[in-house]
Length: 294
Image 1 (spheres, helix red, strand yellow):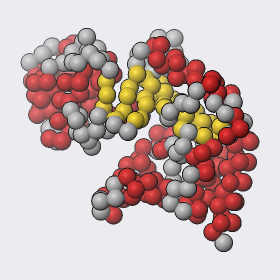
Image 2 (cartoon, rainbow, N blue to C red; image 1 turned 90 degrees about the vertical axis):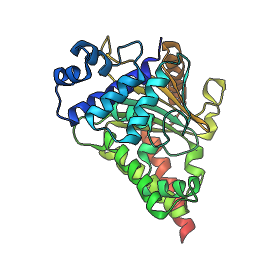
Image 3 (cartoon, rainbow, N blue to C red; image 1 turned 180 degrees about the horizontal axis):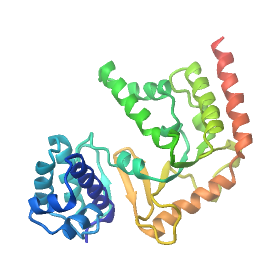
Image 4 (cartoon, rainbow, N blue to C red; image 1 turned 135 degrees about the vertical axis):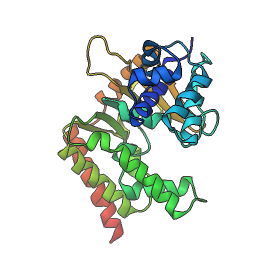
């Protein structure tokens, strides 16, 4: 049986491109020579597998650009493997077809632990630009700007005025101390987090101080648990745990795996500073950076 996650992700894109083409489910199904129920199941990610040639035909019908079409076909191929789904950058799924961003955009709640970096959804443009220039040193300034803009668009899910996603995040104190860009960049970054937290009640931000050690007795990597429902008893789509590694992204769907990271997060959160204490620490460290700039 293929993996549910890539099938659901594929289904979202197929439905989105059908709607962009202004086609009803019945019209598209007829042109694709399948029943409306079959197409509906494909768009919901409820088929056990989906053929690559069907995806190619759908992309042609909906006018999907070649680069995105290759990504969708890659999702179909990945879903048929039945193994842990690794999104190795630039492999089966094209590099610019970012699966995680698609999942993130659909999430209603994100629970995240970031020990060494400011989370992407809270990064300032200057902080992100400093990272981007280090990651892709051979790129042009225009390409750096494009990557920074992608981050800005991602942040819309928690900053929008209508039904923003909830963000529950713990940041390791090391993320405050590792200088990205310059002391001035860090000061602005930390003050921005204080401001965003104050203006958006859907954002819960805490810092795990050095003195808290390793809650649960082990050092945890950065991870995110994405929730797609409204905490109903029977969610249509189960949560997913995502781990970003040097060679790609690892997506965990099994209930036991998601529970493991959820429980680890709670241990980390319980050992962290309270939200008011976190705001005080962020303000204090920001002042320290500002003094270094004088």
